[in-house]
Amino acid sequence: MLGMNRRRFVQGLAGTAAAASFPRHLDAMHAAAVRDALAARLAHDPLRPQYHLLPVANWMNDPNGPVYWRGEYHMFYQYNPDGAYWGDMHWGHAVSADMVRWRQLPVALAPTSGGPDSAGVFSGTAAVVDGHVQMMYTGVRSVPEAEATIKNGAQSLLETQCLAISEDQSLRRWRKLTEPVIATPPAGMQVNGFRDPSPWRQGEWWYLTLAMGTREREGGVLLYRSRDLRQWEFLHILAERKGSIAVPLEKSDANEVWECPEFFALGEGSARRHVLIYSTNGKAYWLSGRLDEAAMRFAPEQSGVLDYGSYYAPKTQVDATGRRILWGWIPETRPLAAYKAAGWAGLMSLPRVLRLGEDGRLRMQVADAAETLRGAEQRAEPVADGPTLRERLAKLRIEGYCGEMRCMAARGSAGWELALTGEAKRPWLRIAFLPEKPLEVTVNGTRVALHGSSAEPLEMRVWVDGSAMEVVLNGEAACTVRFYPEGTSAELLSPQWTGEAGALHGLSVWAMQSISRDRLTTFA
Image (tube, one colour):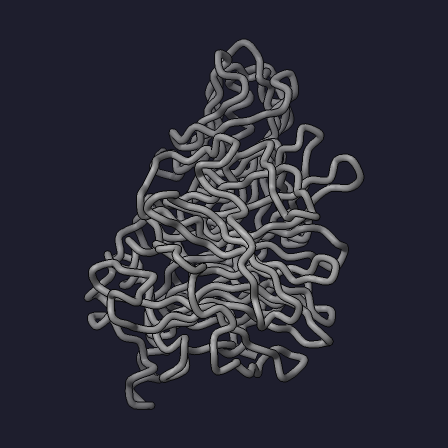
C-alpha cells in the first residue's frame, strides 16, 4: 500500500472482496480440495518467502500486540481468513522461541456480531496486567456517515478502542469487554481517523497513544491516561505534523492520519530519550527527544524515516534481554489481481533491534537470532584487480531467492554500485554510491540518507527471501525492496560490482534455512 493510507486502500478495494472468496464459506469437501490445491501452489511459488513470518495463506498486514510471555514470543497480526486481499480483519497468531522460527496458532480475535468490532478487529497492543495479557485494539462497526470516523465513499465506520483479556496461558482464548473503553474522540474534535491504541505503564498511571488526523491539524497522536485500562482521560496532543521540529514527510494531506503510533523510552542515563514511531502515506517515521514526565509533554529533537521502502505500520516489543525490538509489515507492490491469484499477500519483517546513537538518532540492526538460519559462508576476499574481483564474485550464489549478503565498501573519491543480478542479467537490487554525496546512497533509485561519518566504510546487509529483500545500511537506515521475477522457478542470484575494485573491502553470502519444509507453516 505504498503511497496510500489505509483509508484509500480500503476504498480502492471496495467491491473486490466478493470476487475472491476462500474455503471458509464452502462445503467441507469442496473446501478441502481448494485448500489442498492452494497449498500445493504455495509450496512451489518461488516468490513466497521461506524464513519470514507469514500466514499459511491469504492476507497479512500490521503486526499487533507482539509480546514475550512465559518464555515464548507471541505475534498477532492483521489477517483476512477469506482470501489474499484486505478485508474482514481478524487477528492471526503465531508463536516462536527465538523470533525467527514460527509456529502458527488458531486465529486469536475475530469480529463479534453486533459488537463494537462487528466490521473488523483492527490494530492494537499487548499489556501484561496482574498475570494476564490484555489486548487493547480498535474495533470498527458500520454506522451512518454522520457518526463515522472513517468515511471513504465506500464505507462509513466508527472506530472505538476495545479491550480483550487472555483466559489461558497459551493466549489462545480471549474474553472481550462488551463495551469500548474509549468510545468517542475527544469532545469537539472532528477526526479523520481514531485508531491503533498503544498503552504503557509509567509510575502509577497507564498512558496511551492513539492515531488521529484532523483537516485543520493534519496528522497527529493523541495522549490519554488511566488507572485501570478501562476508564481513560484525554490529556492532549502528544505530537503532530505542525509541531516544533521538521518531520520528514514527503507531502501534506488533509486526510492524513499518523497510524500505529507507539511511544517508548530508549537509552540510559544522560543519553536516554523518548521515541515516537508512526506511519502515514505509505511510510514509517520516527521522532526522538525529551519527555517532561510531570506534564507529559514531548519535545522532539531528531526525526527520520524508519524504512525507505516497502515497510509500514511497525510495532515494537521488549525481548527476553530487555532490548527494544521493531517489527514491520512488508506489503505487496504488485497489482491486486496478481497477489489475489497467488493466494497470499504480505509478510512480517525480520526482528530489528533498536538503539539510540550518541547523536540521538535512531539506529537499527536485524537481531542476531536471524544468523542461526545461516548455512555455509561463501566469501570473496578483497582484491584490487577488477577482472579477478568479477571472477570471484561470479562464483557466489544465492539459490532459491533464499539467502543473506554482507558487503563492506569504502566511501572514497570514486563512485560504485553493488547489484544482485539474476541469470538474465537483470539487476533486482542496486545500491549505488556517489562521492559528491557521501552521506547518501540510492537503493533501486530511492535516495537513502545516512548520518554517520563519511570516512567510515559502508556496511550493506541484505536478507533475500522470496520476493522481498530487507536492506540495512550501517545500522543507520533501512530500505525494504519487493521484486517479482517471472517464471515458475527461482533464478540464481549473484553479486556484481561496478567501480573501483579496491573500494570493495569484502563480500560474503550465506544460504538461509527455511523455517518450513514446504513454504507453509502449520497449525499446532
